[in-house]
Length: 274
Image 1: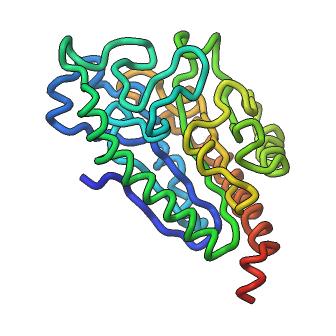
Image 2: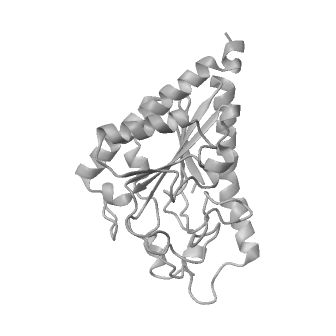
Image 3: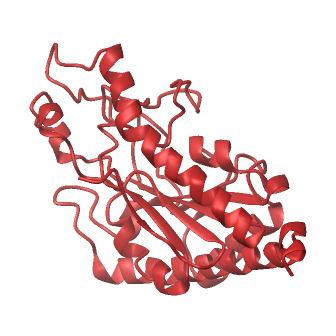
């Protein structure tokens, strides 16, 4: 099983989907609880929702291994990104606080480090390489961090999560003009509830790679899963809702491509190649 799937596009948009993976190696699976094997905290169906992106010219990087194996959107030193309840690089619990492993079967420090090297590092090596290639080729790139989550998880946040949660690390990872444009489209075209830099302001990928001064605009979007699927087993798509959300995502991707192309056209690197 490959660590990730990658499609190389031609335009300055790179989509990262780090939590869509469903594969769990047999040796890990044998130690997990029956509840854990439901993989309920997966960012379900995002490659399918974003299937149009390749035809638009975007590059797409999608994980194949479950976040229960390794969380690709956590820092390698496992320092918490948010105050309060959260999960770590190799989490022992689900979002609801239930154990992932049978008693006495939790991974130790050596196993955690092995997983980081085997699963986390290759994804980030590829992501970093593709960001560098996009900036070298175009002069700029927009990195779209695509995520989804159940709309109600009391352990992580109060009440019902807004439908669309945009994050730019409080303005550090992307221009305010880009975020404003994306939020405006969502407000104009839908009646989804929207938050910007709220509970989900961006995970490790957004915070680490976003660097507008160096031509890298990074935007995270955390979507409430109720807007396109059933949030309980068997976690299947609801086609009408999924089609509606995919239509908006296509518009948001078009905005990100246009913004990336505008930055690319004005970049010193692009000018030097003309």
